[in-house]
Length: 251
Image (cartoon, rainbow, N blue to C red; front, side):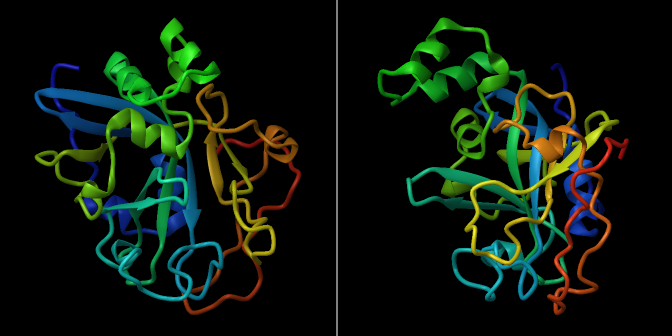
């Protein structure tokens, strides 16, 4: 890409978290590494509902040093480390101090794929994954998962709190082409005992190859876009689930 993609405006993120999640699909994630720009198209995200609403969100019980970015202005990077020592990237949403955010689960490389491959290979032990990466091709797998996305783009805790609306910074989100067909499915890897475990708040580009996990049967048949959600971040009544299964629809 000859010119740096322009960042999304702050107002993009200052909306309902499900609307932000849906519209992030097709958007560009841009990472500045020295003089080079690595660019990837988002194909899978998950929305998280915040304090008192979504028991699966880090912010459910309130602000902590770990999740403080979720309670700050919208459009900032919340980078956390898993128990396995891997990083995951979120973007804060709404901006009303309710602790809502969107996890960026998977993307497909547009520029800098070989640099992403090298970053993934760095420190990777011998095994099937390393063999596939060394063989070349299969670019859609380079960033197909939240930890892979961070590894491939060199995103770590040092970027926690970075403004994703600032193209002068090391990381930002830019406008891409709007996605015509979006599938909604349950989020992945949550505590099965959580009251919000089954919420269909994972959004995927319908025809993307780079999603992080196989589509579940209900998503493959086309889970409709979620309709019900809590009226405010103080309300945690009926779970805002999509009706599953359902016919595929254009979102």
